[in-house]
Image (cartoon, rainbow over all chains, first blue to last red; front, side, top):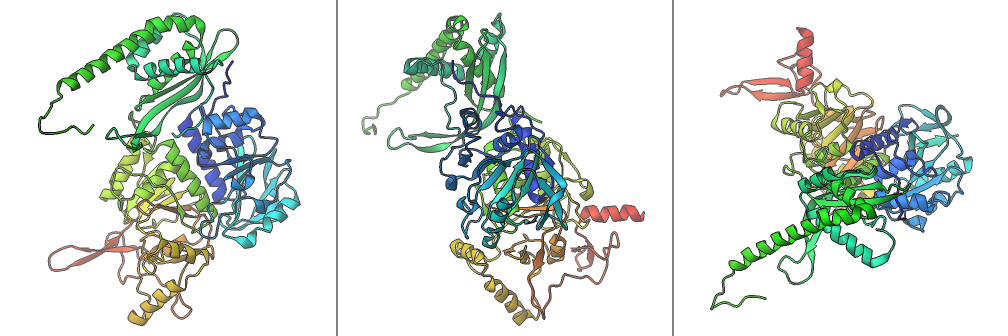
Length: 196
Length: 165
Length: 278
């Protein structure tokens, strides 16, 4: 019989809005956790946190790159059906990059960092993690943070933070990171300074 | 709503079944919602279904040759509604139904998707063909012929002008 | 909500595109992100950019306030407020502290904004360097190189000609020590409120197709010189209605012989103060 994908948002308009507002709040308050309330029946390997963000933000204009663990046919079919986004094999072309914390790390400066005239044409990394916790872990400062925020991100090692810190001198070029569990999101825009 | 995916294919048996599905989808999309609603009401055993993509309204770019000649170009954007759902086939499986209609009536898209799903199920397909699809096809063809005849009747031939065709 | 409208007027595809632009704008404070601005059912200059930003952000639970020159009752503010209560069915308010989203033209409310609020500015000309350099390719390069000498020359020319920096509205600011940004035509009186504001500030320019943002608690510094520091406007009399001496005042001419009255431009702040005094 034909392939029948899982459903998308139950209420496309309000679910997309709520998911976007969570990401916008997270981006405006780096290190703080915000809830993702929509629960679309996304394939389990993707999870409904990452799934909601993709449904809210991805479409034909945003090439996606999926890590090996995510790029299974079920996920590709679901994303293709609901967003129409093109899956690309070359991660340098992607505007959204999806991987899990435990996946093999690619060199961060290999992703699109934007250009000096158009720093917005840079990749956004969507990273699935098991657990996010406020009040401990990394110390964060920068725009959106009154003095400092603390955030613990499960499964992201020091080599990742080193690679990210190496991009800081390139500002305004850079990568924006969105960390996501099943129902929570935190973001680190390129302006956030991270200390271990 | 520029959605490039074709979504699930109808059945599995290649171009001929696609052509058949394209025919009934076109007829369903142009049928008034009231007709579809009544046909749905007449169904004795209504199958279960679940929404895959809830009805939504968007824009589609329309291309065409305004003067009837030359290259196609963008005429403008039109509102349309679409909906996708999975209809229970009664044997533990399901088939996908898709509906795209012009305008902003989301229920209309939902009915088209429902009937698209049902048309792929043998017990419903044959009955709907005679009950809904074939009569609608005739009604729509009649309406089109009548409008063409009305237009043709108003055609004026000028002796001093050459038509640009 | 009436049939036939998308929630908040825009279709979901358009909202997605604007939402992506907004996220990049927040990630790069003060940088102007190009976006595919849509035709809106009102003319350019009436807030098409601000409306598109608000429409992409607003949800059913939001409470919207719209002001034009500080006032809730002017034509532009009333039409935009009605537009969103019609197309999105959201609650509206005139009280600054109750609003979750405030769309504004030409003012920042007097009452300090709190964390979680979103201030949406309507922007006519997003490029602060445009009057000095008409070519977009050049201004883009100047931003890329952080080459803002021309802006300082303009402010210097003010001093050379008038003895002070005569720019009184749309006064250029430096955001997060990197981008020079047009704060939209707010009076420079409001510039200090932008610095480290707890609310999120979003800017939309519909005709010029640009979106930019200032995240909460971000440094926003008005450009100046060591010997000619930035100063805000002052009045030698308080508001004639509420008596406030620390607000931005509008000059109202009340008769044919030129009698003048100075009243608060922020109608909500003025009324709250009058209520408090009564």
